[in-house]
Image (cartoon, rainbow, N blue to C red; front, top):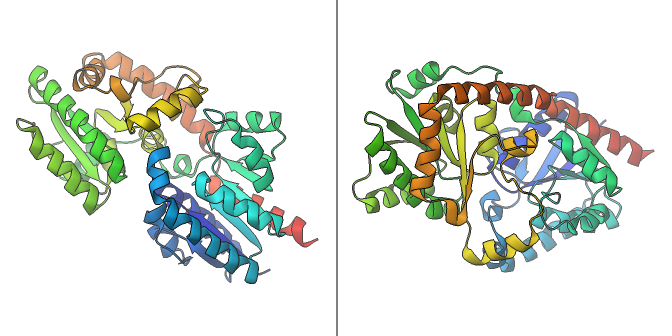
Length: 382
């Protein structure tokens, strides 16, 4: 069996998921042909990228509108290409604002479509469920609570687990991580993760560095480290650090975000996939986020959940602090971090709950996703 796979990923987390799927498929079908929009992980798996993935990495309603004049014609060209040389299946990895429109056009022309990673319709803009139902033959979801939501709306969904839960060991060793980074093994460390997108880093560097200042004044000897997702985000973070003035010393690493989180006693981070990763590493965390004021004003009217971070959503209760938008002040962020440092029993209880959630998500996800894609292709060929 040969397979021509069309695939689009929109950011770093989608690139990892897409790469896992491509590897699982290529393990069964060595002649797999894969093309679309790919990041470095997918490129390393032999996937041809037709356009730079970084141009899809936008966050927020206002930010997305600015990129629309570029992305809409690009998507039209992809549709034309794949209707001229039809793939056996299209897989859109996350990036719903881009991929669902692409999937709808391809599906209408008879191309089987899979969307990998549920849009957060259970959280906000639930009317998008109708758009998803028109666009996809199958939805691959990473979290068990999503299957029930889609069943109520008549959308075929399959829980495959999360590849990060497969990749990250059930136990992590902070001292080993510190040795790998070349930092002191003793003492207390706090990791600061302002995000992987430039917009996130611009908005969160000030509050995170301010929280580090607040903590350093109250806990002498506390040290800080941060990973930079790219040279651009590193430059933004270091510029914000210099502008702060009396900021404590913060060691900056190029990439290595997982090792940085594993090395920390507490992680202060932007909401998103990094919060899931910190949970799987069993690191106590404080979650924060900021978007543009207009995006936030619109989102407040559309959000249908009381929690934002993945650990809290998976647990169905408030496991970790969430300080969003105007609540993301240095004082409040610092106080939330300090609570973990001063109450080690609280951190241990949290780590036990993180272990339970880790086991729930550990399902060999890439292989399960490959099974689902091949089953859909086989049904289409019959």
